[in-house]
Image (cartoon, helix red, strand yellow):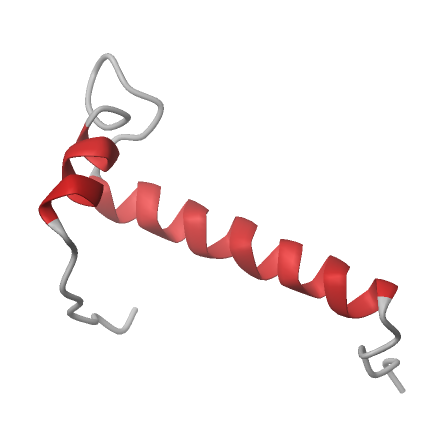
Length: 58
């Protein structure tokens, strides 16, 4: 799996950390970020579909 580096504002990182760990929804930051990316891309696909911007699979 490729690795990437990103700069994240401290405020977002603090919010993210509230959802990570034994008491959180995610095991680690990487899992939380991957889930967020997937959800965002799904939402963008839904928007594109509503506006007729998705190409049909051939």
